[in-house]
Image (tube, rainbow, N blue to C red; front, side, top):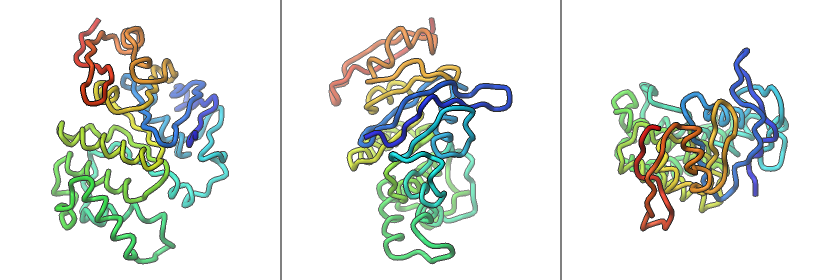
Length: 259
């Protein structure tokens, strides 16, 4: 099922076009990677999906309903968003930050219930951050903060998870762990969309890949097809060495050179 559907979506910042005539979808039960050079429109696509940016044209449907028909709290239960997060140096305990992910499930000013605290503990544990619970965000490294903020997104338990560069500040082991968690969310039926600059990570762990360039969708499909030699050359200005990943059985990108 298509959980998020873009139909001829265009978006502008003033006179600059950020997205131009995008038609695609994020599928339930799959991890969709969104890749492209800097300024390609990756973040704009995620923010548009949540109604955070007004469209210049086209339409978006969430779980079969027009985006405009969703109330904000209702949408917050249906879709969770993890923005780029390196500067989240808040004087809050990590468990308090993760609890923010439970706000859509509670009434205004209602205190957390046992189910909320259980979701917080489980999310921190899944992100290898259980020991961070009583530490403040402004005490963490960028990578540690990224793990806490990802736990906040998981705590919501939404059927749609949109993550913008969640691997940016993580060490290699935690990058792999992050992608495993995204795949776990997809296996439970969630539609997962993640922007990435690490193309080998994308080819190894994503089911589908959208390639954006200058606000346009230039390729989409299974990783090997979407990131073809021609697309790598035209979009990124690189060529790649491809190897067979023994764990996934996929052809993945191993190393690059500029053209």
